[in-house]
Length: 152
Image (cartoon, rainbow, N blue to C red; front, side, top):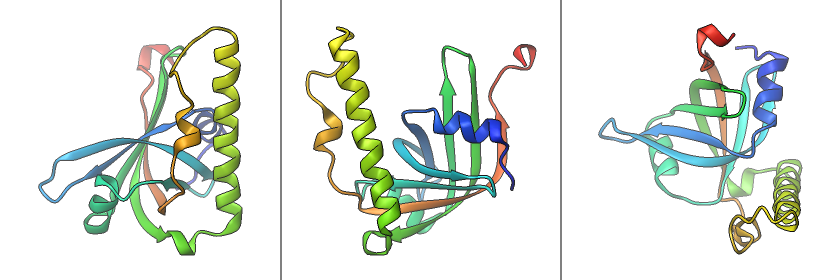
């Protein structure tokens, strides 16, 4: 499914995304993940630093949704589709570099906010994240615009 320039820019502008998978009992599980790439042909790449519930769920059920919202603009999108897992050893250097640049950018933004006395977390959690364990590659099959109709 093709993604518009508007959707791509929206997702690229987010600090994190909410990723929802389904467990073996049919219950949804949501987690925060950082996006590495989003492509117009409808592919999204996310790196995960844990082998937790998201990983376990995707091994048995590839259904996934990725949600991003902008509370200030009262807008957002939910992308639904199917995902596949690439193990750490199969992640290429370009994707690893993009992840490291993303972490550096998040650290920079946190430092700037702290200097402006917009205190958040007392430490810098991004600096303590482990190396990525696997890559999630999602093929988008459906786009849901979360912006209320009367605000479009």
